[in-house]
Image 1 (tube, rainbow, N blue to C red):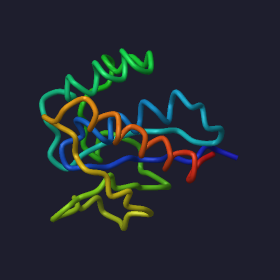
Image 2 (cartoon, rainbow, N blue to C red; image 1 turned 90 degrees about the vertical axis):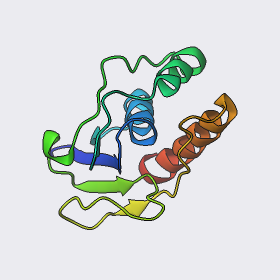
Image 3 (cartoon, rainbow, N blue to C red; image 1 turned 60 degrees about the vertical axis):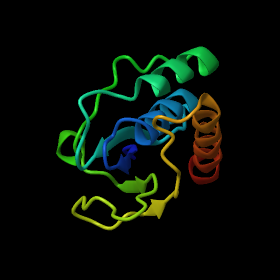
Length: 127
């Protein structure tokens, strides 16, 4: 049986969804391929997210880059990171909304809080 494709989706694909992709890949959940995408991708990944995952978790995200939903395989499972006012339209309904606050521009503690929430959601959903 083929692996299921999982997409973590947020508007800019620069922080929460990128961290979720990196953490899920590192966790090594069997039977899944993980991707991230956004409806309006930024030019680059949030550099604080890159730094914190490298310093605290030894995860190198430098090869990751912002993508649109068209840039990844069609997902079997689509997870919103938390849209606030408006979720991006990806051509189908989301399977789950994790409701995560965007830590962009906030202190490192906020990133670490969101990373912890992502790890909990990953274990609940895929562990």
